[in-house]
Length: 316
Image (cartoon, rainbow, N blue to C red; front, side, top):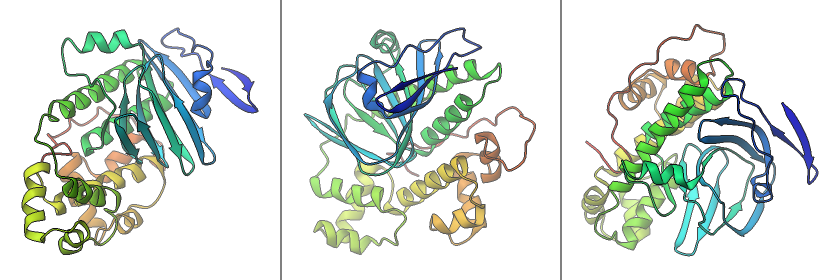
């Protein structure tokens, strides 16, 4: 492991002992990426954990490589000529190479970047739909994969390299599935606003009537149109987001399960456990063990096969 001091911050590059590759020096464009905590090169992918200790606004810029970003803590808003995305904890953002964008980081931020030359994604595009524009996905199955990826990235055993490659490809598959569902009729602005309310305030005690009043439509009309475009009810989306947030706390904190249940708006620990198993396919304690946040060392076992989980836009 080598360290170089740049712009008053300690930057870390790391040789991956299992791939035999050494991370390239951090270039000028990457200077906008905050403090690099860890960095590994696995096959065609470069993974780096980056940290911003304070709010900052990054001016418009572009990257030579395509990026997948998993938000671990904090959040940021990214602006493009065609719109913007708000990236929150547990979310995964895809940014094609060469796209001009600016970032606003309002709080402390920690994230995992996965970058790769554009030709790698061009090859993948022959087999699946790869977005040509910035995209964000935040379904529970994607969060599961991203947390697994971060856990493997943090390990240094002989199996982590091949596991990382497989997980990156699995996340790309989720991005491709989400992109293939974008060919839907234009969503009314009031419905987009209602969806944003649920996405950003899912920990609050929301009601259908209150959301309808805020966006200026009748609650019956909101209920019908929400299900038509999002393929799930408002209550179902709230539950998914709460389970997703619970998985984030399980993977990145030592907060007790009973406390996580209260933080995430569940009536008690058993309620959380029931819904967590339903959406994630494993119990909360098993998920925490696999994510590497178990309080005591445990023997690593074969990972459970995920049950089919509906993505963001699908419901039962």
